[in-house]
Length: 156
Image (cartoon, rainbow, N blue to C red; front, side, top):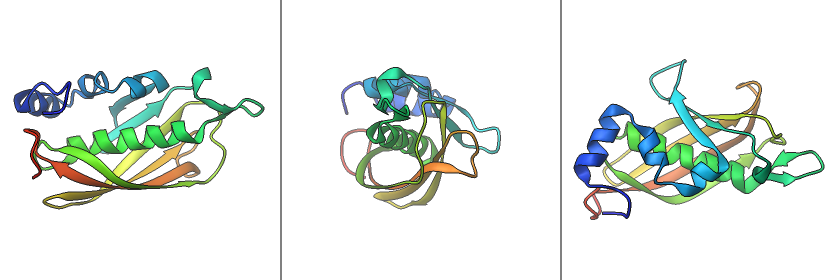
């Protein structure tokens, strides 16, 4: 069992309740950069938000978010969304991530929505779109591949 996860029962309960705040508490970097989540008003999933923080700035002249912060935000969103969307409680481990930075991410609230493309017995594929003012003009998109582990510590 990974450190911080309090057993399969805890993972199942928090997942069934949709208690992502309990999961975010176990992710110090996500808390540091300002990741929050809420139910998606456009569907059954989640909407993720990255709060504008001075520590997230990569280019102080614009100011613009650091590309690594945008990547970490999208990876966090994909991981949490996948943990909630899988058929049974599973712990995803990232295998590969591909990010397309489409425009400058300014120091304003950034939002993300995920889509589970495929969940197999051992692998899952997720896409993420991140935007700021309008969802139709994303600042970045990402494709992520995960290995799905059994929450007891073994591979599924």
